[in-house]
Image 1 (cartoon, helix red, strand yellow):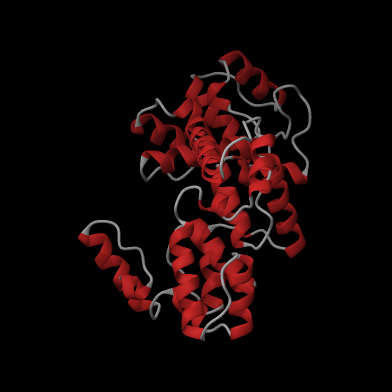
Image 2 (cartoon, rainbow, N blue to C red):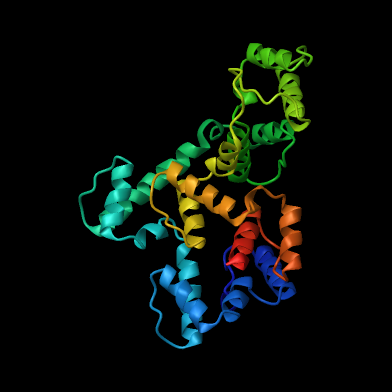
Length: 299
């Protein structure tokens, strides 16, 4: 696994499956990606990451692979920043800016950890059974571990701009009445009816009667449920500036999506896999991995 540049963590069954996927795709996608780059492209990629650009082609490739492995570590993006950038980042978060570089980095890592814990919010104390039932009511996939279930619910909340499940029955009935829908039944039935109405092109008004977010706000929705760490890593992968608060990070990603003329993040997995297959790329992995693979292919 290590020789192929693949992840070496997990049970024996997971390792076996990973090797089989790698065999089907002709070895690591990342390895093949770097092998196909010319010297200038390798230099450009290393420069973006602040790495040395001297050496033979295989040395450059090895440096990029090592950088890929390091970049999975929490807070890696902060280690690439200058002291001035770290100060700016801490100032934006209202944190102390004094101390040595490593202290500044540690302070930012602690902020990110706190951000991730608060991101789970109202769902953190719920049982897996409750989370799966909630996802099923919303018509969403309800398989996976607790973190995945919470992530899916959070993203759905942010995309819709409202949280039917947390609304009192009287508000649910009022919203249904505004849409000309039946207002009788249990809370679960009311929630389900509103979600069905959303999917079938029902009312696009919020609880206060105002219009739903404009297109730009909808675009932002796909990133609102992500942590600051995920957003920074995504920006770094795209070769974009990755400092700033959450709103700035999201805005940068949305602008990049719109500039490119496509929005991979909003595409269903089947379409992402089809697009990758058309390009002769590996189609295995999570949605985030597929999106990143397409973005790398674009570059």
